[in-house]
Image (cartoon, rainbow, N blue to C red):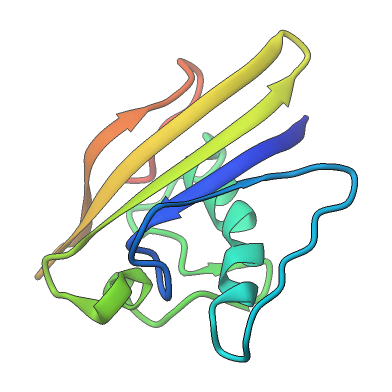
Length: 127
């Protein structure tokens, strides 16, 4: 499995839609505190969130020792209590490319819920 591209909207420092296409050499440049690390860590978060092996009711805010925030709202640009995030991920699998998209919304009391998703049939969103 290879990640072909990934994207986000309203995630951490990225208010507008950002799409990153990965090549053999992909450079991410920017000022200090502009979101480079958050962007580079995003594919790991997305893969964990859509992994069918994850059977938990919480959105994964810690993946392999990397912390993405204390609460789901910290993932949302501006930290809005009822804000939403959009994610996309394109994987190159043995049968060809598979595109995955999801929109998640912060909800007071339950943490988050899925507004929309387009997942491969064998995958599920941690909800």
